[in-house]
Length: 68
Image (cartoon, helix red, strand yellow):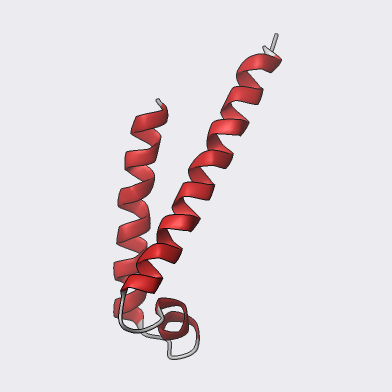
């Protein structure tokens, strides 16, 4: 039997983790000299996309460790 309290806790922590990840990406985007989103989407800059993905992956690991 599934405990709904545990499912709700997991959903809340997942939502908080996603929110922190999005806010931190927006902060890094503002701190860099060029718009990361524009470089990735409009100019198809693969190297910027790899750096952004590495940043988000490392932050996701930190958030998951903090939640766990």
